[in-house]
Picture 1 (spheres, rainbow, N blue to C red):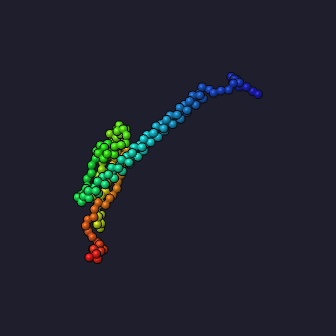
Picture 2: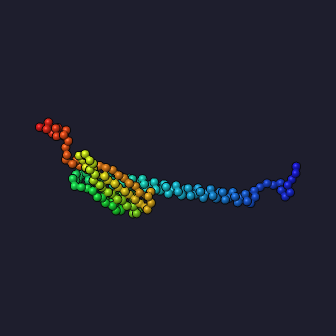
Picture 3: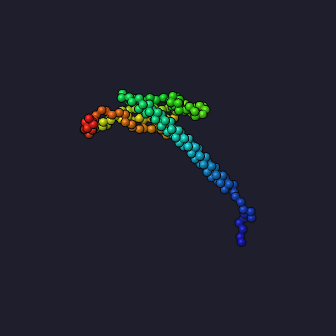
Length: 170
């Protein structure tokens, strides 16, 4: 066998091979770190969205219960907006839920409730569209919107069948 000049019988890694391996390992670790930070941010946003959905459902259900318990025939178009924390305190949502300091993160959260009266053609009922928007940041992904349409009242128009039924009862 022929030996190459300058080759030692011991084999190993050269300094260049070690440097390339360390660079690749560093690149992989940086990628994993960036991915984990992104996953934590996404998880935090989904937690906020879940909390917002609970708050929105409670506010909307309470609003609807108040409106329908009053049996108001007046137009209810309009709405209101403001601090979500103040609204939840006003509705007594936070009572009995532990330390009130646990909800300090809600100080930067806001809500906007819009109520719009809707009358459909050929309908004997009026409807109200409720749109509740809860937002907690600057981005488009930092909001939750809950929308529903409820029957508000009958308009007093009777159909021919209804008037026939009224006459047969007498």
